[in-house]
Each structure stands twice: as structure tokens, then as C-alpha cells.
Image 1 (cartoon, rainbow, N blue to C red):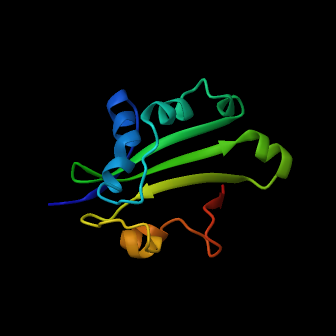
Image 2 (image 1 turned 60 degrees about the vertical axis):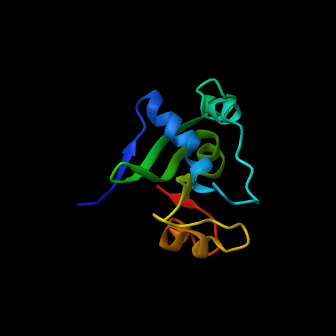
Length: 129
């Protein structure tokens, strides 16, 4: 039986899958240029100056064993101190199983229901904790 699971990334193998997911998602899209893996690793590394005032948790969505999405949840203490709004942030990349991304289409057309998951009416992903 196929099922969707969301798991926190706890090891280097999960981080590797997280970093490589956009390459798989946009494979075959002539308009896509994947980020350099080295840059993605540096952006997510604890030595990134952003993490001096923020915490992040990475997650992978899997359909059985196939990675079908990724999410990063972020709490930025500087933002909380400045705005006092209790906001947290998240960003995601995802693709419906069997979807074929094409940059000329809207996200909801590219990813089906996944494309708009987590979006507010204005398109932002801001959330209040």
C-alpha cells in the first residue's frame, strides 16, 4: 500500500536527498537551472551567519520511498524580537507523483494540489506560531 510520510532529516543521506530533490523535480525542464549542490550545502550549514539568530528544521515528504517534496521550517529570533508577531516561516519544493514541471505553467498546474499547499491568499508562506 502506498502512503505519504513526512520525516525530519536526521542524517547525511537525508540531507543529500533534500539537496538533490530540485534536480529530480525539474529534470527535463529546459528552463530550469538547478542550484549548485555546494551552495545549497553552505546555505543549510550551521556555520551560515543566518543561523546565529535563527533555527531551521528540514523535512522530506515521501510517497513510499520516493521523495516527492521537501520543507524547511524556520524560526528567526531577530524577526520575532523586531515584529513581536509570533511568526515562523517555511518554504517548500514539491511535486505530485508523476507530475512533469514546466516553467511556463502556474505552480498549481505544475504540481497539482501540492503546488498551492501552504500558501496564503497573497501567495506568501508566512505562518503564525
